[in-house]
Image (tube, rainbow over all chains, first blue to last red; front, side):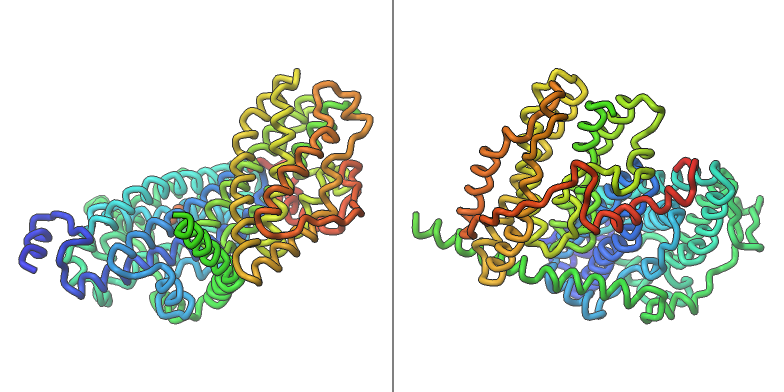
Length: 308
Length: 246
Ligand SMILES: [Fe+2]
Ligand SMILES: [Fe+2]
């Protein structure tokens, strides 16, 4: 274990074959699994608009985006598997509610503008959370994050572009964009987790080089990045207390209602049941297909053996 | 109506409606790899649809765009095969449809490559590689499902049977394709299509369906009841905001 600590202290990478404390391994499995689950559950609110995307170009971009998220899920489950767990078991934990996914995906996508808002705000917040993870002490997770972050920044730009087009469109389109920002702003701020004072896992994760910045630091970074972009769009951030502080160089803002976050985490968000039920149904409907693939592969392997 | 416009629209509508159905699998597939694969296939189909509808609009010369054609035509103006519009059904149905449709598209695009119409030939040149992958993907699944478990065999057979009566329409010739020398007369593709599809079905241990009755009407804009709902969903936002840019 000394070599583990030495590697962490030297800001080096822990690789799957290296010795690591059980707590480190468990923390990573939980975090990577939750991240992977978020990628695949996140396909639902956006997938909800593929069939209705208002132009063929937007439809193609959205399909590619949702497909990217499935790919992110695949990389992340693969990263988790390097820690000695199976994707199938992690999916069971998701389906039984024992592992969580990001609460943001428990909010509904009600209009086309929500697809823009998700790309801009939710992928934007994900980038702020994930860029530091590219330097995470666990090598496979860090490397997965490098690939994921590149694609998330495409998503963020595409989301911004959707809103930009709406904001330069008809009055109804502008209203749609403002309404989406009004609904997604607060849940986006919650994506950085509870305030530092109430954050339970943070300290140990920092010491292990899994986490690099506190929740509040990241939230501030997101606000500082996003507010000027809202100005470019001509949209109003729904916070009467939002001010730029010349002295600190940061925006001061109203904290989101963390009670709402705790409720959504507990399962009481607008779409928790729907998202999980959809996911479980897809999995159960596909069981016979996965069984068939396994049976076929086994038959093929047996035939190869007999032939050899 | 301009023959080239109508012909291009037929192929474009096939691809568009197929893409719309394929996309319904995203976030609902049996496993994550399949969400990605069907996403790829749907994107290929949509890409083909866009190229073809753009060209149709250009040929028509009435100032319409791909989006005008996709979003502002009614059921009776769509010229796609009924096979493309049928609801997805289970994964066995999906792979049966993909095998039938992609094999047809592959044969069609192979011939269209040699068309004297440079744009159609160009679209076909790109698409032929894409649909070769679709055929391969469908083939792998038909084999796995047909020769997997008892349940998967039963479901694969059911999918093949249910969609077979919608395959005849693919090969129907008509005066338009006979007249239009840059078009492929699909009647000439049938024999090879049957050969290729039969080979896959035989290897999968399923039975090749034999039902003689074949539906038709898609090329004349006569569809199943399902298309109206598909279009209602596809078109509703665009039609709620006429003239808007997205
Ligand atoms: Fe992602
Ligand atoms: Fe993303």
